[in-house]
Amino acid sequence: ARGLKIGFTLFLISEAFFFVGFFWAWFSSGIGNLSSGCLWPPRPIIPVYPWGAPLFNTAILLASGAAVTWAHRAVAIHDREEAMIPLGLCVLAGVVFLRFQFGECKAASFTIADSAYGSCFYMLTGLHGSHVLGGTLFLAAMLVRNYFCHF
Image (cartoon, rainbow, N blue to C red):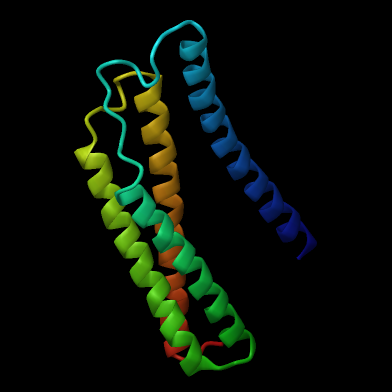
């Protein structure tokens, strides 16, 4: 059990550094361009409007975080029926988030090959989307297990 705990902790640290590395590259590329008088993002790129789908997705993730806390508390006190509602909401929120994330990437005016901006944007968006997909699948499995009284 101790080795599993250490292994999982190292996994979480490596994931955090993966995100830090790509954000570092993104910010470093932007600051380098701005300090030399260039534009960021580069001229042909039109950045994603932050007050549309990204803001909506942020609200979905925050609501999902509250729902998963609700589900955790219900599971902890063995209230199976109470846990079904927030688990279902979390799975629904994950699916909606991924749908909007896919639409956002599909509608973007740039590709992964368009500059450091495009590369970092799609790597960070894809990495985050894969984490949400993994979390949604785990929560869906928990929903099914809860339905069949495995807790």
